[in-house]
Length: 418
Image 1: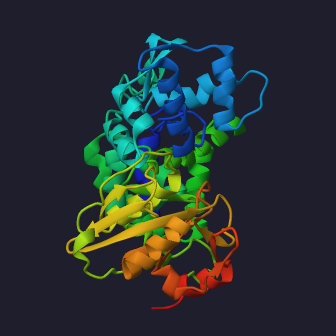
Image 2 (image 1 turned 135 degrees about the horizontal axis):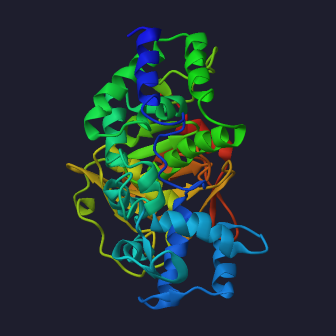
Image 3 (image 1 turned 180 degrees about the vertical axis):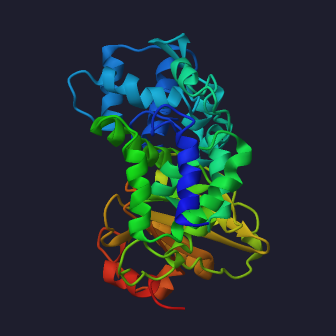
C-alpha cells in the first residue's frame, strides 16, 4: 500500500466523523496503575464490610493518600478520574444512585480484586468485557457521541497486535486502531499499520498534519493524544499486554521486545534479552507447596507472573505466605521452580535476602530463581532473572542476618550472554 493508499484509508474514516479525534475514548485522562486500583478496592471493601459505602470527606482524604495527591479537595479528582475509571469502563464498582457518587459499592469483580494475590488475572476479565461505546461500560453521553462504535476494544486490540509483530506505537493506535468501529475491521487496520511502517518519516508526518488540521484547538488535540497513552496504561493492567513507553506489546512478545526496531534514526545497542532460567526436574516441586499464613502482596509479583504465564508457565502466588522464602511457584510440563521477586520504582541497588529466603535459595538450588524488577511504576519496567543466586552470585552476610548482593554482582550474571 502506497502513501496515497494509507492516506485514503485514514481520510475515509475521518470523513465519517465531524472531527479528527473521533476515535475510542474508553477512559478519563489518568494513568491507570494496578497499585492504586487494588488499594482502593481493598479500602472500599474494608470500609464497607462487603456492602455499600457513603463516601465522606474523610474517605476521600484516605483515598488521596493511596493515589498520592495533596490537592485541597481530593474528592473532585477521585470522582473525575480514579473512581470513574473503576466504574466505567472497568466495572469494579458501581454508584448506587445512578450518576451520583454519594453511595458506592464494589462489584463482585471489585471484591475479587480486593482479595486477590494476582490482580492482573482479575483485571484481564474486566478488560475483556469492555464494550465501546455501549452502556454500562461507556457513559451515556459518550454512547450518544460514539453511537456507531460497538466492539470489545481490548479484544480487538489483541487481534491487531497479533497481526502487527506483537506491538503497536501511539501513532498507529491513534490513526488506525482507535478508529475501528466493528470487530471485523481489525485486519484492515493491521494492513494499514504495516503499510504505515513502510513509509518514510516525512511521509508519516503528512498523515499527522491530515489529522491535526481536523481537530479544533491545541487543548482538544493534546487531550486526544493523551487518551491513547492512558488507554495503553489501561490495557497493560491485564495479563495479555505490557506498556513500554509509547508502545503496547503482547506480553509474550515483550520478553523478546529488544528485537523490535526502535523508531529512532540511530538505535542504541539493545540490552541483553531476558532469559527465563530452565530449572532441573525436582519431583517435590511439581505441586505447589502447601499454603501457610497470608500477608500483603505487591505489583511486581503480578508482573513477573504475567511474563511467566506468557511463556507457558503455570503460576501460583506465595506473596502473602510466610515461612517459604519465595513469592511465586511456577511449573511448565515436568519443570518447576520457585521465584523470589525484588523490585524498585527506580533502579535497584543492592538486593537483600532474608534468612528465610537465603535458606530457601540454598534448599532449592537451581530451582530457585531471583527475579529483579526495576522501574516498576514506570511505563518501561525492566526484568532480569537469575537462577540459583546463592551459587551464582557473591553474597555478603551482614550482622543483621540479611544476605546482600551488590548491583554490580547481580548485573554481572543477569546480563551475561548465554
